[in-house]
Length: 192
Image 1: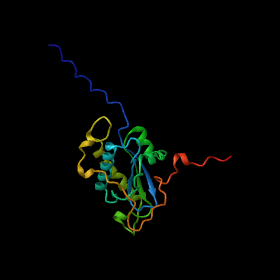
Image 2: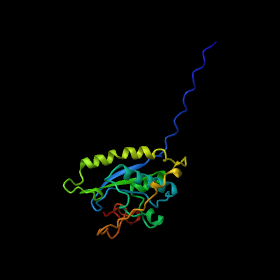
Image 3: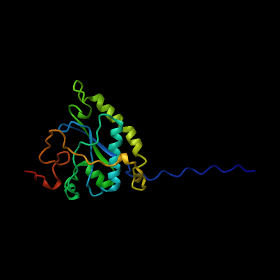
Image 4: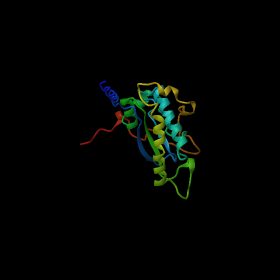
């Protein structure tokens, strides 16, 4: 009896697409909290990206006591307003690749959600915050991607929460521009 043929090779991996979270990191001096600045109201924003954003924030909040889900930059009032700020990396990436994109904002001094005045915010806390992102990414990997509807099965505890910068006696800048950058169409022309 002739030997049986070898099993067929495994199928090739799917074409690599940007189905991942794109996350930038930034330290911010105005808000004393760790928070996610998202891409709310960009042209590709819809139920899928909103659900994924909610899951990212909720899972990160569960994973690290120094991360909170409520205080942050409020979303722009409209998609038309957001289009002016596509020069912000988070907005540009989410729009161009139709993927979850966010900026992790960290305080310079101390994190009010779990304040330790004698220690303040420090490199050790930053490392722990970064390390706690790994289980968040592991959790999200099943839900990411444009080709499946897994995001529709996210639990209610992962629902999107609209952030606010309204807390205590905090006075936000009089004009907020998503990480305080200039709008694309309002730049001053170069002088000779």
